[in-house]
Image 1 (cartoon, rainbow, N blue to C red):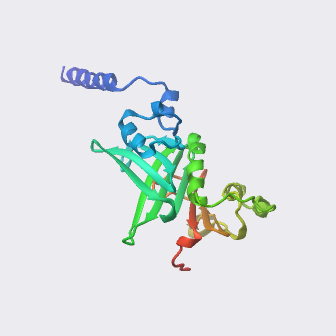
Image 2: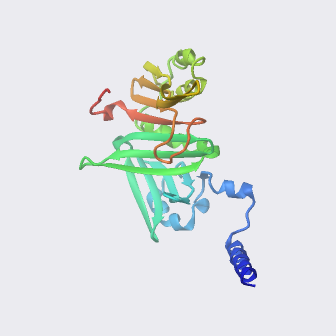
Image 3: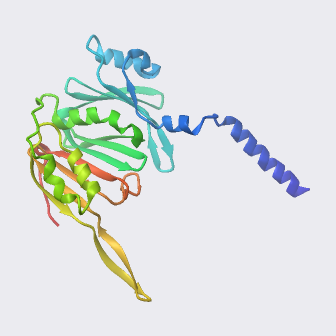
Length: 272
């Protein structure tokens, strides 16, 4: 009888939990992890509408995206409204019931990190302060919607005050030699080229492994260095690497991490 009572109690708890879980189709659940492009004030969530309207004023509606919220073990990302206006990246979010609007001047942004791991992507923006400190802001989203964030990232990388110049012919074809050794990194390298970019030099580092154990004629090795490519352009340094993500601890064998660093923001370099 005790087992029957315990079993009924467990099933009762499961049934109550199921009632509190919203019934959504898998497609609708995936949509919640996508970026959303906002084009009118009516599409802006009510909680952000007041600060956003005050920020924009009478100016034209800026390119604006809404990032999803993620909550999990040791990983949490809040929903954010992101837009660029007057050479400044603005992020509006709500935390502990308080809605804040923070502006990050594009000229103060030091580095942009873009990570991709299958359907998971994240963007981390590092900006300097007058006190010499570094402030980072990041958001996470489904890779299926990554194209919506590209215009904002390109605006940060190029700079709103920099005119778009035509890309010199042959810049993209400089990575053809990588097709045979690492086609994936070669494609990411080509995608890193923005209008007006000139590639000065690039270095490809293949994977480096070392043997840790040999048993029954079988060698077991450990990866010391994952494949990566360093690209020096006339206005930024681009670092693209495979491997394992340090921030979200995701396997990046089917993705990569890209760092975009403005040359004017580099203060020191060390070589090991």
